[in-house]
Image (cartoon, rainbow, N blue to C red; front, side, top):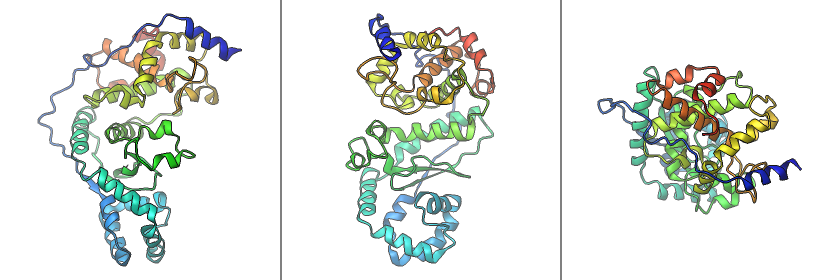
Length: 345
């Protein structure tokens, strides 16, 4: 009964376009004199060119050349084992190289990404803004690889990996065969345009501003994710909102259309201060839609993150002098809510 009543509640409300737009609200610093260049190291190309007879030699070279990344690639991504066990590496890597699936996938990546110049340029610009806000941040290595659809943007001690096989484009022939493990509503976002947003999001969530165990209720999760998405607003010029949050155009339109109604529903259902993770996590994780809201499965997913984003945007409009470091330092989510005076718009 609750599911039906909520559907009816949203269906009969008069929709209004209520959204806090980002475009003109962010004042960015002059970064033209900052000297940051990004060169994505093409480990994927080196692997594609590897011959079985050269495995032992390359295994020794790559331990030195790629350090932490190569160790993680062999142990966590390919699951072959530590590269120090050279005989095992030779045996198992030979099998990998001879598999048709690996050859086809590597060829597809090579064809799709003959170079990564645009991604390097866009990453460098985003990292200049990041370095301006966080001068102490050490720019990592960026290393591309083919991982058999295992990891998209893994992060290690001194690197961020880019699994190019997970950015081949929504029309890639490989993704429909993976629906049991990677549903199409996720793989539709595996596009070249998503490389830079996903790398920046990983850096923000893992290196700059990891979520703490103190974020226990819905509101704190909202504000945390809202801060991450606002930081992406700031760092990623000319990147559409759809690529930041991972919505389709239709989902973003739905979220904007029913934004005030969704907020009213969170309040009505007493969800803001709910600490039951199993109850609230569905408003922040990947999904094709939000089951409790809308009808005909047309609702947008991750509505907790979306609402938090709009809340933080409104807060930052009131505090244009505040930088990301100051924003991230605010531990009390209630302060963001009250100061923003966010009520769904």
